Image (cartoon, rainbow, N blue to C red):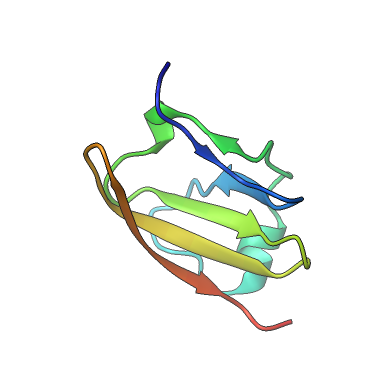
Length: 79
């Protein structure tokens, strides 16, 4: 099957549509709840993905490289 990024244990994911990284938790909070799965079309270098942890904390990750392995930077905001 095609590669995908999946959230586990109650976390959720959603692609961030903006050009710039989200600058605050409300940028990601406003997105609709994701399914917890990001498909291969959204796993491109510099793609941004908002997430909500299983503890309700918001954050985002930026994909740096995806070529059989996945490298990314992430930031989780304090509540």
